[in-house]
Image (cartoon, rainbow, N blue to C red):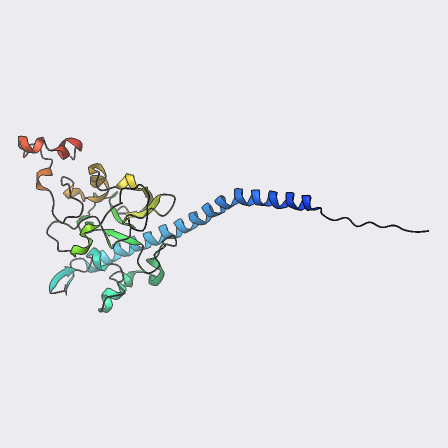
Length: 262
């Protein structure tokens, strides 16, 4: 009596079908996986922005009004140029950054996981933070930015001329490393406001070249009647929106007519 046995395996067609199905599933799942990973990086980045903002609040209480000599000039220790660490600096306080004493894990805190530039801080400060007060809850303090200082200096301040060519975005509607504002997370960027909260913003939502945005997010309440020209250090005095003080020439100013700053 004989026994016959047969062995079964996958045919080439079956293998191709399985590979095709797996490829389709991978193509469908990969965007979701990448999106989930980016959400995680965005959360880490937002947490670091918040830590920097809280540290700035502590430093403001501890160092407000304190100055030191830098390049033969007296500067406030909360000058936005010196808050971040500066690896090229010779002085220890500038190399670590003024906020170092208030920060934990300071080596990592200045880096956003989504930032392709590994050697520079991922965040910048509103240059007018020194003027923020109790009525400035929505104003930006620190945000994802490729420069140390976001926006222009307060009128009368002395800043390096190198950053006066700062560009919010280069006009091509696509963020690149050449733009200063850095919406790295699904076209949004994390920012910490004076109201001690973190939110995500799109470029157009807080673009300071728009006078409404400038009033709402950038200028301290006490300076809300000024339009600060991008890339300069002086206010345009003709843009004060005080109807009783404006002459006919000022009332015809395009800026005055385009944005009612009251």
